[in-house]
Length: 437
Image (cartoon, rainbow, N blue to C red; front, side):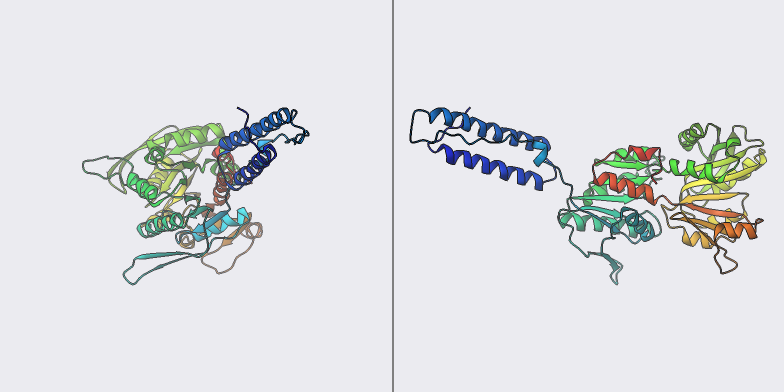
């Protein structure tokens, strides 16, 4: 219905002023695209109605101005460009190296935060810069002192949330308590669900993780969860580092990883096998049965995590007994607790490959053989029994008889790209099958 006023010019001016204010306000807020479009459209229609009505009413009165003020048509998209808040990335104390690689990839500085403990071992976190209206990402992996690191993450999330952060995303490369995802015996806790509740109550708005032990853990949350996969990086490593990969077979050390190995086998167009295991108790395998033919083939064991490495070492022995020519192990999360490193050193692996979702520097130093670590495209070799470093190609030219045992795949670019796409409101599904460069 046309808006009428005893002072039409003043009414037109007020409507146009309100239109400009609405445009400015809509530019300052990050959401409300549809609502803002309707607002601009309504105000624009009202302005045109005033112009039409006042020009018809002013025809009979010679004292009224006969020329009407034309209001230009408004393009809602010209004014309502949604702007996401600035980005801040903070690192917990569990994996500062991964956080540094992520921010280097994004081209930003790591946020200032101080974490310390009181004399009674309470965790204290101090955010060293303003996060008001910011898009905050906190990188903290479930490794090392898991309980302390988890509590530190919860405190950091809450500190940012009550400091008026626009959104708080927890980047958890290795999700803690992921193996306690079901009630497999009487009175057993579902600790993964408890961790999910704690993160939500602390104020997390979004979770980014990699290779959950069970994909159903995503359903424990009422907030969005992006579960990235190490599979694209694993495929890239296999093609580039295993010359006989076309004559390989992908093996799962347990039935639970069958879906994972079938996906990799399909991408490589090779066959797969699996090993059925029975446990006496946690971290102790009773028996293993191989299902599949690995004779005269390169066996590639693929699993999401390795803790004490009893399973993969027993599986490697089983594969060699079945006639495999070489055995590789590729793991997403290399926990390597207890006797893991000594078991790997005594096993028949050509190489054990892990990602850096968990810090691996200490584990690689404990390996008595050559250790190769990929860092930003530069191959850095560390010879533990002699204290010198040389370039990879020079070393292999001079010492071709050496082999390397423990290797690390850098997945920081995948997390950095996930952070960038999340911040810009883009889809992250590209990362499920591709490695960003």
